[in-house]
Image 1 (cartoon, rainbow, N blue to C red):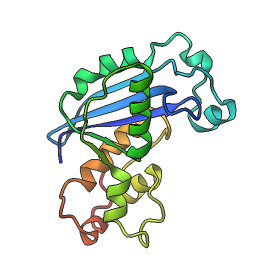
Image 2: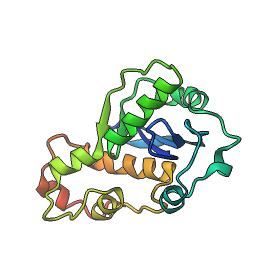
Image 3: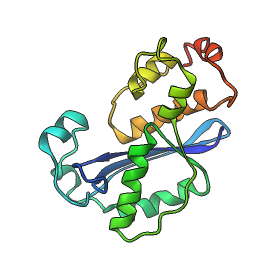
Length: 183
């Protein structure tokens, strides 16, 4: 797979609909061609102070004047078009995006949605990669990665991981152990 949109969301609290940041990276024919990042006024609009400070650093004052998810999504949707989505831990990101669509009474498009965590677990033995977290997978594959839990940085890292893991649907462990360093 060489054309897709990698997406990542951050949340303000334990409600999946509380998206406070969204990042997306569009890949066409194996090349990153576009990036999207925006802070979002979450719904419900409250933050777990410890959670946000320790995880992504986004707080109430960062998003109080931002647009809500429905407006941000409408701006991002043309970038996605008909491309499939990919996330690192799609279960989280897709659940949040679906919940936000429901809160704003928006129809959820029936996206094809792939997951780099699931692909890594099926492709890379745990004996050679101790974790399937985004920073560890990036390190294992030789992909430079900074600013974890910034939605755009996570989306870009996910895109680069996807380009490796989905490059050959028949890839086996032997293939993956010989690709370091990627970048």
